[in-house]
Length: 234
Image (cartoon, rainbow, N blue to C red; front, side, top):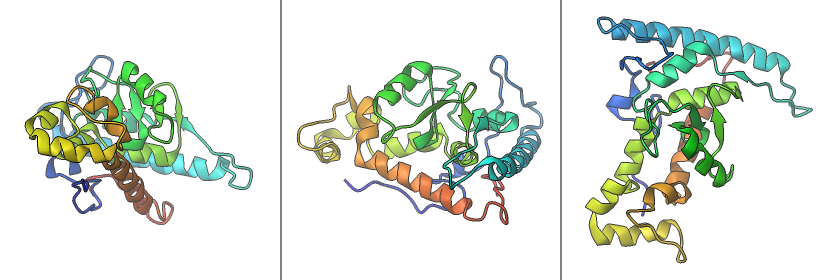
């Protein structure tokens, strides 16, 4: 089955009007900043501006400390404003796989947030399928931070739903659609309503999404010094 993906504009992979703009969702979880309900757009815009400034400073440090000849790659903690912005993206307050609240781990390959339990399952898939890192505890490259900000659970979740890679959509679309899905994993494996959400990362559709997200971020960062990252809303 050919993946159903739309043209990729500067707003993100498989861009929907809902997920292509910066979220105005309030951040009201424990230990995290709260966006005032009366001025969410103003606050989110300010958060986006601070995030871009953080990323510009991070890029300068990356260029100063990285050494391509020796293979030294500079990493640092996820920037503070970028972290708040990441949590504000649509869908990111729940794990993409099990819907657990307040996920703090990232499936970087898909720009998705996952809980600690599901992060272990992603690790078991291997780095060729899904790279996992803690938003709070691990260190990140400039490119990885941008990739997370250009992704989001609502975005990849919508892609999975359109490609029948959620339990609800898998059950809804009937046997014909299910037979088409078997081509994703080969003759010796088959998707069912019960396993589709755990096996979907091994499908051709998931690989397609991952490659398009990488390509999209690559285009955004072709000239990061001359044309620094300006955020999704721009």
